Length: 159
Ligand code: MG
Image (cartoon, rainbow, N blue to C red):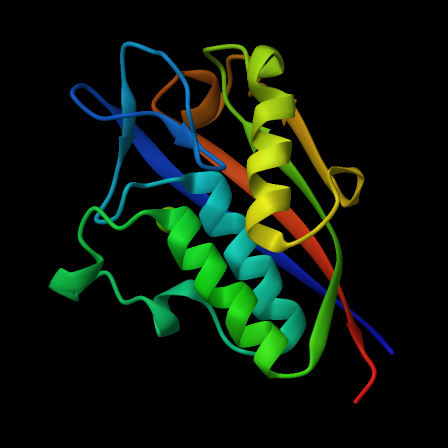
């Protein structure tokens, strides 16, 4: 049986923070603000995986009220979720995602992000797709106030 899950996340762009997307640091004058490292793409992928597995959401597993998740490396959180999913006897088939960001351009970093996510997911890079779009200067994305990310994950359940 195939299972599908979606994930969505957004974080505010602020001065003095790093811009991490899918575990790749992108040079920019601002970065993403949050309790963890605020890797909005990793968070969307985590929620897509948990959704497909029927295991709730990222806040259930890594509450932002807990001090131990402060500045957490979200790729490590993703690796933990991948372990949980494997422990359930589920296999990750593919992940597709979209980063919604006005600036900077994602294109120069897309392959690096794909490879980093694929490594964390234990997948071949061809099973991970990373897309990008802007907000066409509309809304919080278009005004550069924040970055959003969407992800879809497919799992195989042979239990
Ligand atoms: Mg988040």
